[in-house]
Length: 181
Image 1 (cartoon, rainbow, N blue to C red):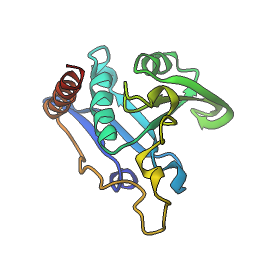
Image 2 (cartoon, rainbow, N blue to C red):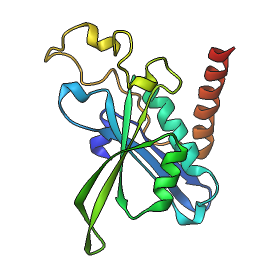
Image 3 (cartoon, rainbow, N blue to C red):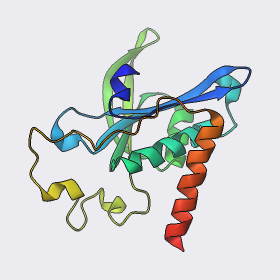
């Protein structure tokens, strides 16, 4: 958490009696400047809260915050087999991007890692091209210097209640509807 919070949001979903029942966060994909507009994300929902769309709500709120940070590309790495996670991420707009063999060691055995990718902002003119449209990312107009920040000023979100997550989602949806009309 400490590593992520310096630059990116980490969202917590809390239940009034069960406590923390889920989280979603983003972290740097690579430390080099060329990758400062790409993140890796993760989401977890307690088994006691499956089938309640909590993962969807957490990711929707996280993606809205990442869009505000001008993030263009999101990667997720899934140890396979894990059909539930793959299915969930594909429903969230991720597409398969690559497979790394024997990349992780979980539960006493080597596992392959499936990488999936999603582009932000959703519906943006550059999203289908991964930000490679007219002029690319706004930061591409000026050369990168060592004094530049890796990301714009971070959004200081360390934890959100379920109600606060819903508020972020509602604001994001109302902004999207306003842009469509």
